[in-house]
Image (cartoon, rainbow, N blue to C red; front, side):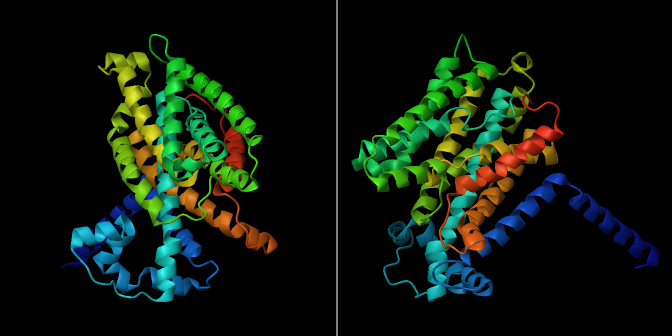
Length: 386
């Protein structure tokens, strides 16, 4: 090969690398993945059973688990379904103590955080598109308050149904949004009426939540209710991963496929109608996807605030308002935010005060979200309509 050819090849390679790393969406996705991996390793390294970061990494990559489909299926599907699918009737290979603790107890918490962040970010992005308002989120449109009310009602009045709390939370969120849609309906809906109806329903439901606390006689019930209504990943296990994973896959795939429709909705109702879109049907269907995603996260972790509100803003500032890129960015940035917040929730008190207690992850996301919105207010002259 001549020197000139080698020089041209090297120049071409450098050009491709520059274009690769100059892509804002790719950079955002890669950096978010790195954050998730680093924060996840840090998360599984701490607990009542002491492990170093190196030992945690070795446990995560333990060949006994990662190269044995039976262990992977057991964790993801449950032992009974694993045995039915594989026909395996013997005993699985014994795991080292560190590997068992990391895989059976600590990794599920990280996975639930990833799935919750993904769901809330996607849900918030959809709600912001269908209302054409940057301030829309599962909180604003009543989904979270409806779920919170049914959670409190179950814990305080129907305590015998606590085993079905995740399902009840999902149903409550869905009912709340249907109520919002019914209030907003007047020969069709509009983005403004949806937001106003969401504020009305959210205010009423939040007031009812506060009132229910006065009827709680058991302190343990109050603490459990607070944990649900502020969002917490304490005690997350593989059962919650199995519960949220199928709904996450469905919601995220539908959201990605619907990116074009979301872009059309951003053009306004008249333009969307002139392009042949049935605006009300599309808006209602996409709202259903957003409610499904939000309800799945609420069922697994309670009400984790601000994620559905601030993640679309972060991604929009990095890659623009095209939902084909924005939705992909949300799928990566949402998990990064929640995993980092959960590390802060678990280790924050230990670092600051030496206490081993934990705070709900929803408190940490709120502490992150508040200053970020203050930054947005100072930076943007017009904050609201997209």
